[in-house]
Amino acid sequence: MSTPSYLKQRRLGWYVQLPVPRELQDAMGCKVLTRTLSTRDKVTAQQRRHAVIAELQLEMVQAAAKAR
View 1 (tube, rainbow, N blue to C red):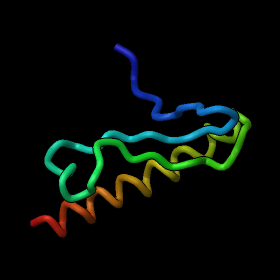
View 2 (view 1 turned 45 degrees about the vertical axis):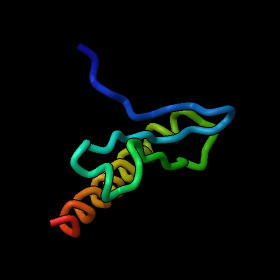
View 3 (view 1 turned 90 degrees about the vertical axis):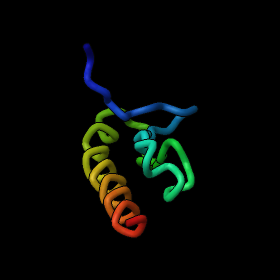
View 4 (view 1 turned 60 degrees about the vertical axis):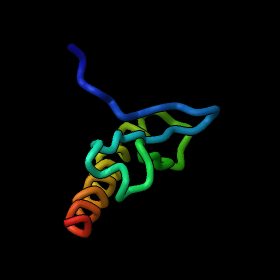
């Protein structure tokens, strides 16, 4: 079983895609959160992805808190 990378390439740029849990999809308004890493370089993207994933996870925690 492989671990998810969340790192995706679209055209020439790199993005992070993070699935939204089903219970938060209505509150978030989407099934997948996508953010650009603003780079074309894979090594740079791998370095930037951790901070972006943390931001997206924080958004989900805040949405869960508002939904309660």
